[in-house]
Amino acid sequence: MSAKDAGTKRAGNPRPTRPEPVQLLTPGGERVHHPDYDIDVTPGELRDLYRAMARARRVDAEGVTLQRQGELGLWPSLLGQEAAQIGSGHAVGDQDHVFPSYRDHGVALSRGLDPLDIFRMFRGVTHGGWDPAEKRFHLYTLVIGSQVLHATGYAMGAAQDGENAAVIAYFGDGATSQGDVSEAFNFAAVYQAPVVFFCQNNQWAISEPTERQSRVPLHRRADGFGFPGIRVDGNDVLACLAVTRTALDRARQGQGPTLIEAFTYRMGAHTTSDDPTRYRDAGEVAEWARKDPIARLRSHLAAHDWADDTFFAAVDEENEQFATEIRADVRAMPEPDLDEIFGLTYGDAHSLVAEERAEFRAYRSTFADAANTES
Image (cartoon, rainbow, N blue to C red; front, side, top):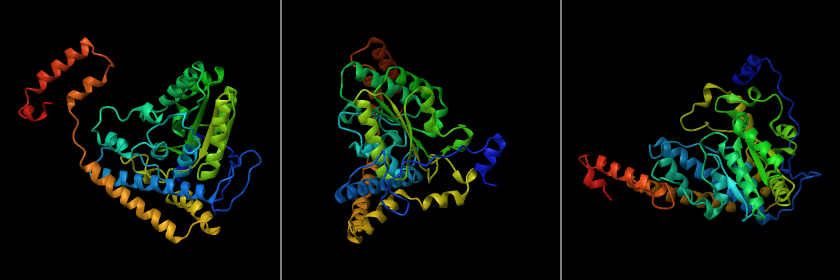
């Protein structure tokens, strides 16, 4: 008996029924159509989506490697979730706002964020991260589910200001067990907030399967709050793009929130501090490996002669060079001036902060290497 089956048996609950998700690209790479969600994409756009997913996977792999080499403190891998992130990320408009969790590196890349900003954070050499206003991509949130409330409040404010913008909040299946998420759903529904809730259900909240968190499929949570919930094949980049685009359009038109459950799978560990072999079967991982989102799109491109081996090799070569540059830049990152954090607390000068800075400088001066650390 698998760990997942054992967990369900211990709970004494049957497995929830899983409805067919919205799908536009089968695991074998065959293009299919959906009566409610469909899109027209050119071969060039398909190649761009492939490049984006391959780039996200290579950057993610470099993050894992750097952490294992002691260059990063932690790294949460997105392996297996590239289609969910790139598909939805490419649906976001320039005017929209993104509230990520801590695994959404693919979304960050799709918004044009410098990946070194992410690596600085996990290396611990930045006191902030990045400017959320620059790319309308807000800071990573390690507190589970809190960003969903932040996104809802931001969406309510944007609506009050008359912005023609939507907000999208990313979170995992584990976050749906948090009270913050339920509160966000309720506020968004009551105020018709222009927000899309994008849940990447990778089926494992660290070591707990989804079956032990919910008696119903996660997208049906929306029913109780009075707004639409949709399940999409999270390994299908086209379906994720189409469904998210529709939900964001709906939000901008004043029709309120939508919950999207992207049904996918976390192929790697929860983070680099986790050992997934302790709680899930190798057979389950192998089954999902056959549904690989990048291989799916590659098969589709190759079957229609829209990309050949030369194209795929060029993408791999570009990504290897990109990863090499990241590796060198990460290792060369300077340590931050510890005194700098006092300048990031308030926008204007503050007497209490000035007092604390003086106390900190006095304390730091007692160390032997103080001369080397003073700014």
